[in-house]
Amino acid sequence: MEQTAGSKKNLPNPVLLQDDEELHKNSCAVRAMENTRKRHPFTDKPLLQSEELYEYVMKTGVYPREPNPLKELRMATASHPMAYIGTAPDAGQLIAMLLKLANSKRSIEIGVFTGYSLLLTALTIPDDGKITAIDIDRKTYEIDLPIIIKAGVEHKIDFIESPALPILDKLLENPEKEGSFDFAFVDADKNNYWNYHKRLLKLIKVGGFVIYDNTLWGGTVALPEEDVAEPLRERRQFIIEFNKLVSADPRVEMSQVPLGDGITICRRIC
Image (cartoon, rainbow, N blue to C red; front, side):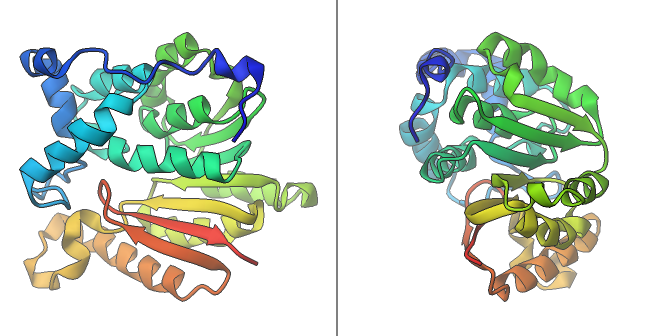
């Protein structure tokens, strides 16, 4: 994707804020690194079961290229009790690449939390790009807001504090909105994933992408129900049903990718 002259000045130098030795000396940074494994509170391992291999991937290919504002936000989120639900940097790296491959300019984000994926998108799309960001809680988004402002990308974001379905339905009331978005990222209530999917495939253009987070649910989707912790079972079932439905959807090409807590990439083809 070509960047406009205005957008280039907003892109940070993709280097570490601290080198690896300093990171290990900084307890906040260490917590931030640990929280990027996308661990669920009822599981004790990332999807990539080898800790050594996971650290190799992160230190070799992810952290050295993570833009400074994203690193700053990841560390600011590290002490939050729900930090594990943030977008994993390895998944974020792939999302940024897809945004560029799709020449994305208009995006929808459902579920913002502290805004790692939102900031990533804002840093990636052109300076005149726009993101419709929807979340039921503005408080967590405000953790990210000072970093967004400092990065010079606040003007790209339209944050809406609301459940997502009414906003999507409102957009669809305007025929001009159909097929007007290039990209969508969903990390919200799992019971509504299919409801989001049905609406997003009307809003996203043919050739555009929709990405769903947490679609392997800590690896529990492959386990017998009796082996899954009780608090995980209900949402696990929603994810299993969504995975079946989207796999059979002829309107999309799709790929399940074992990054973070599992992401499902859908490309609209009709």
